[in-house]
Structures are given as C-alpha cells and as structure tokens.
Length: 239
Image 1 (cartoon, rainbow, N blue to C red):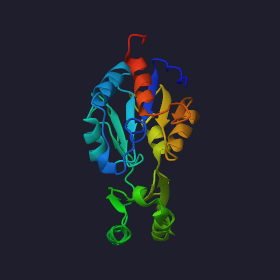
Image 2 (image 1 turned 90 degrees about the vertical axis):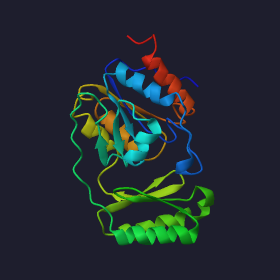
Image 3 (image 1 turned 90 degrees about the horizontal axis):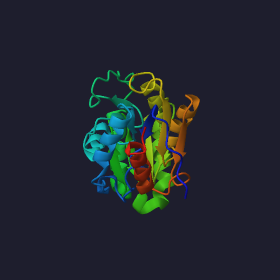
C-alpha cells in the first residue's frame, strides 16, 4: 500500500488514539502502547511547533497516561475536554462546559452492564457500553442507551463494538474547529488520521478548513504504518 504524501511543514495533526496510534484490544484497559510512541509524539510536536493533538474518545486522564504526556494537546471524550496544558506557551481555552448525564442513568446503565455481561466505561460527560466479547448483544445495548437519551440533550454514538451516550452537538469535528482557532494550530493545514465512524467528523472539519484526513484501513493498513508516516515527518527528509 502506498502511504499518503508527507504534509507541508505548516501542517497541524489531529490523531485518534485507539485503532490509529495503538492497536485495538479486546478491552479498553488491555491496550498495549508501543514503547516508542511517546517519544515519537514528542519529536513530532517539536517538528510542527506544537501543532499536534490527540483527539480521542478516551477520558483525559487515561489518554494522558497511555501516551505518557508528551508536549501535545488533548481533545478527550470526543472533543468535549480540551487540554493544552502540556504545550509550552499555548493558551487554548476549554470548550464551553457540556451537560453531564444524571446519576440515575449511570446507575441504571452500570446495572444493565452487569446483568448482560457487558463492560461499562464511565466518562466525565457520558458513558460507554462495550460488547466486543458478546457482539450479539450490541443492538439491545444500543437500544437501551437510546431509550435513556430520547428527548434529552444527549445522543448515542456507535464505536468499535460499543455504544456511547454523550452530549449532542459536540464531536471530534467541533474539537478540531476549536483548536484551529488558537495557536499553535491556527493558520496551519489541518490533517486528521482516524479509523472509526466518529473520526469522520474530524476529517470533515479538516476538509472544511482547507485540510484533509485519512482513515485506516483505506489510507494506512494499521497503526504501525501510521507510525512510519509520522516518523517521515520528523526525520531527515523534513525541511
């Protein structure tokens, strides 16, 4: 497979985490982070003047821990939490605070997960039901969350063998647009790399802003190829 061309020096990169930078595992807590990834992200950030963001459905603390806190920005929980505190000199404000689901919803969903043998993953502004080990239960689990969200400011989004309840109107695309309004991202060509349906929102935002985006497996066969491509940006071929 021929990989996409390397971007110009004035690029801004928006990178999904699970399935893009790290391989997907049977459970979210079972992923294996390649030991070279944190250093690669740090060099990439240095090469692009800090214009690198991890845009992930993971919670902020988990995303930072998995990547070992390189100097990049984070758009966690599908862009609902913006954190640029690790970027030297960056002054990127947080997104307007979204609503949080009622505790009764969390309790009911956790009980449902236990009863059905699913994995419940709590987040600050929502929660996820994972059914990778029992995918036949996916439609019922999705319907359960949709019943909760009906008529509310929340929506249910599909993911890899999972369904997530989260606030409406915020996604990876809105995170890209927000970050592109502020230094060091402003004025650069945005490029998004992802692998899931939720990443399409980020790609659409990049295209609206004069950039582009790539999906696994269409443009890259997997995370290892993404790493090779990123190494090309920070390598000796860089201008």
